[in-house]
Image: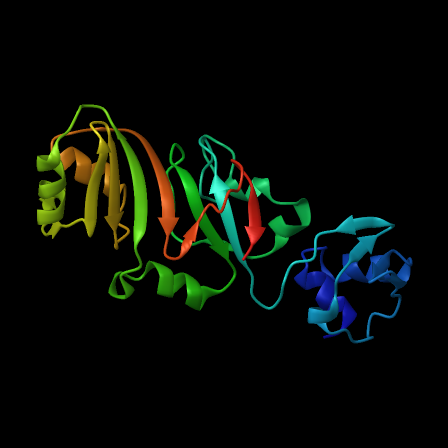
Length: 225
């Protein structure tokens, strides 16, 4: 890959901006100055990247996969309306790269959120036909018993929907803590399912999405996977 294209792929600016950085001896890769825009590099060999001596996080290409422990009061959107965007949690240059969340979490929902620039991976993880399990830890408003779990597993009819929706699994940890597993991704699905079963969601945390949990990431923490 040509150096100029590589810098653009890292979100470091337009073609003109990246050319300026190269022409002014601003770019170092693996500790060596790179000032020829047409020179080629192997992206997999790039260990360090710096601009004017300041280190820049290297983004894997062509595809990357991010595991984020989403905090509350962040919107899963590039154009948030009320709260900051989850994408604001990443370094500035990464915000210039086209990436999307794999599904969405409501602003008040916390936990596992996957983000990628791989459209096929995104589709595979979110398509109902692939039945990728998502496990939510639900804090209930009202104390519940096993009848709630049975109702959710049997299936409930959501408001304004025509087909029942079933939980793949539902287990009570205690009277107000429900572990709910679903394989779909309807709008506000967990909250609507619990409401249809006669209770309310006080707090919602996604423990696991497919094979991934938060892997001891702190709130707001993230990593490439």
